[in-house]
Amino acid sequence: MTNNLEDQLLALRQEGETAIASADTLERLEELRVNYLGKKGQLGALLRSMGQMSAEERPKFGAIANTVKEAIQNSLDQQRTTLESAQIQAQLEAETIDVTMPGIYRPQGRIHPLNGIIDQTLDIFVGMGYTVAQGTEMETDYYNFEALNTPPDHPARDMQDTFYLPDGNLLRTHTSSVQIRYMEKEEPPIRVVAPGRVYRRDDVDATHSAVFHQIELLAIDEGLTFTDLKGTVKVFLQSIFGDLPIRFRASYFPFTEPSAEVDLQWKGRWLEVMGCGMVDPNVLKSVGYDPEVYSGFAAGFGVERFAMVLHQIDDIRRLYNSDLRFLQQF
Ligand code: DAH
Image (cartoon, rainbow, N blue to C red; front, side, top):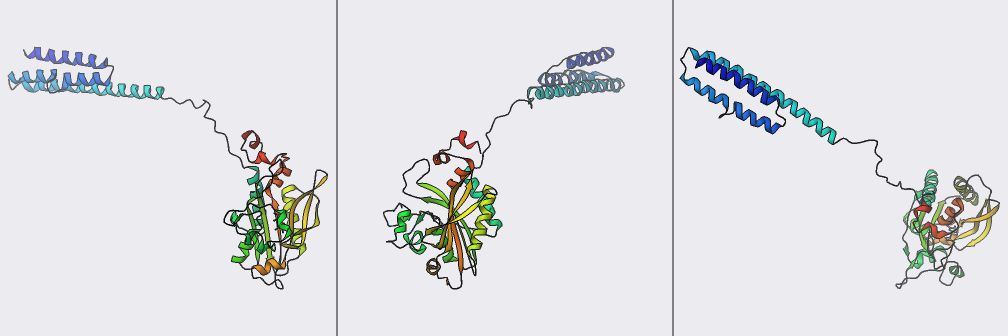
């Protein structure tokens, strides 16, 4: 009987090792573990039969049983490692990312030509020590006209067809209103650049829009002269358009005296690009500055016009209809 038990133990080891080596899933491996080494497993059953042995025989078989248990446990461990790494390997292969596959195309954004001009202008003036200011698009008659030396009966009001609101306010017709708002709050010396949207009751066509953009300049100090105005405007225009001839032509604006229109020689002809002048003493008085002490210059221009000249755009409406075929060119 004792030899028989030894044979049974060795046979169990043989059978267990073979079965474990051919287990092809972790679930199957667990079944085998329970079957051989579990509480109600085969090894346990054999060990229980040792209970009938004599005390001398027991240790010998106990030792054999231990080697069998260890051997089966080793096989289980080894096979578990093999199956687990096979599983990881299979997962890695199944989840491989092909980094050479084409990605999802995302079109890149661009700076709109109008914002391009605004950004460039602000950069240039901030570089010359100017501060960026903004006003409001809905304005009172006072800021848009009256404080700018344009009383209600002034013929210059016809130069700017105005959208009046039912409450008597209006949509600003130019960014010149920001001059007044800024001077009321600050004291000289002043250097300010003010971009913004303006409104005119124009018929819309290739060169007119009811809403467009302007940029306003204002400098107030002791002793500023027309020469300062010319130098500033020249530096600015040449950094936008290049080193082209510029001329100042006498003109009229209610808020400047003298006033001038600036022309730029562009592709062989003179193009009118901005209005400017020395701030009228009446404007200085309207914000409480003493015209005997302070003088200054102002200028204003249309952003759309700059963009159209610079990029040879033939229709102002192209700047507003968000057609990507058009915008992607800039
Ligand atoms: N506000 C004028 C316009 O919209 C442009 C302008 C002219 C602004 C002369 C100025 C200036 O500051 O000095 O037509």
